[in-house]
Length: 156
Image (cartoon, rainbow, N blue to C red; front, top):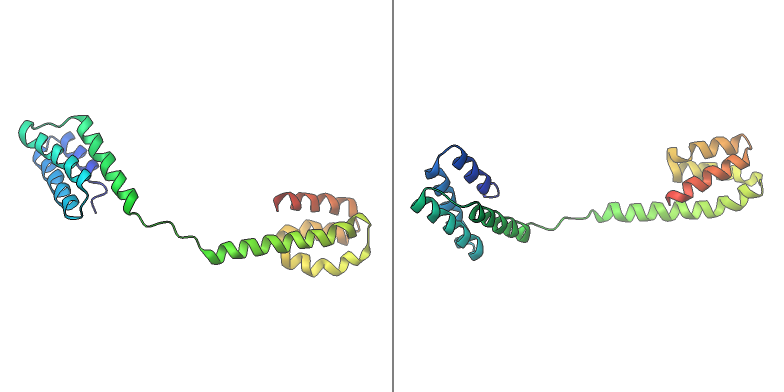
């Protein structure tokens, strides 16, 4: 709720609305004190007093307030959640693809027609990534299939 307060203070100053800038600083000071954020509360108090006493505030004090607010927000922000299911699935898929490549490599290099039996597994494991590989195998173009397999392997 207070994350944009420094920007609001700057906007108020630009609009020559010193009372609003002072009020925003006061509210931020009080809120920060309420949650025990002393550094932020002190910085907001400095800005508030500058506006109250001088009708102006130094850029240094406003920058300090902005820094203290950013520090607090970073400190209290919840950690980014990692979708464990997606990570596990990605690792599992990568392992399946690497295992498939290990099976296919000797068959392709020896032009072994047993590779035709792997087409359903290629389709299932590689999806559309395996379309060109399947096409090369169907055409018995094992050199092309080997090159395609090398390109797939580089990605995994």
